[in-house]
Amino acid sequence: SLSNKYENLSSVFTIFNNKVKDKIDLVSYNDSSSSTKYYTSENLDKVNINGIELNLDYIFTNSFDVGFNTTFLDTEDKTTNKELTYTPDLSSSLSLNYKVLTDLSTNLVFRYIGEQYTNSSNTEKTDDYTLVDLGLNYDLNKKTTLYSGVDNIFDKEVEEELGANVGAYYFAGVKVNF
Image (cartoon, rainbow, N blue to C red):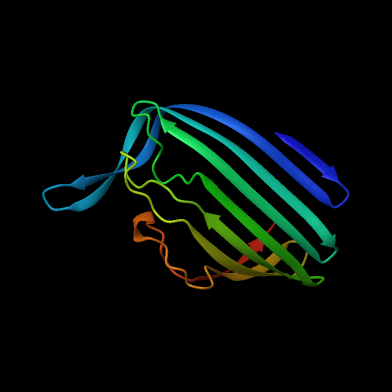
């Protein structure tokens, strides 16, 4: 990793090369007798996961900052020489953070997830997609924060194949620091 801070800009640049033995991974198979797909976890003998990650943060004012993160991945199951399933080559996010009042802040996050293979033979891919999230935080005191938000505020439909298509997701909670 290489990190840098210059005035209001901070950055982190990371290159990684992971060689994994016996990686447990979700794999899918087509049942030819019923033309349905089923999923199971399997040990992949040897896997390489290489990537580059870039994180940039810029503070415009005491009440407004922006964060950007992007990750490029190159994955390979060394036994089959195929890419790993459900692992996008590119994912990125852009976060806009605004402090409305001293104790009240909000954030808007754009998340991009690239295409990804859905089968071990690398013949089927999902489409890429972008989601937008909105959050709100209120500091009750130095140790307690109330938070709420909506993930996927535009109710963007994500391919069912990815198993995470809950639509717009509302949440709220309390965070306590000890």
